[in-house]
Length: 193
Image 1 (cartoon, rainbow, N blue to C red):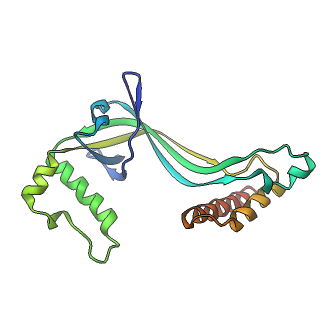
Image 2: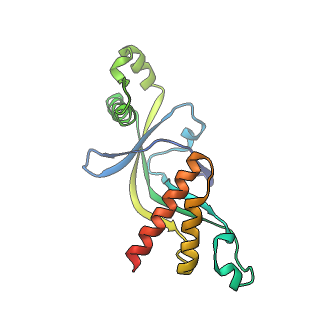
């Protein structure tokens, strides 16, 4: 996400953790030059990268305290996220872009039975494609971990949420997220004892 001329812009990109020329850890990505947000991305711009962890809807019916409070409970959302606030640097050097693409390709292709490699494409084609992208590098200024895991609720209500998350059958994807939220709630409770 970037703020430029008072306008917020957001784009969804796979970000890699890398080491820059100065030896600092940074986040790297690339964007097509014809992407409408590219015009807003200037060196030194403040940016925010958001990484979503597991998240799940929490029903007030899962709280045992709902009975004793005469229904004074509302639904909520449990989540884990990381926000990286930083500054942006753009890269157009073909060598930088090629190395970034090589790292990104290896990151996402390494587990495939027949992984694709940059060298599988003709070099003149890759050279042409490099002219159509811009590399992005975020230098972190501040990193915030955020989690809402019913820590504001009683132990009994937390246990009700954990059990209900484990028992709720949604889509396969959401069921996996529910299970992970429940696991993290158990883990957080055990570290707070």
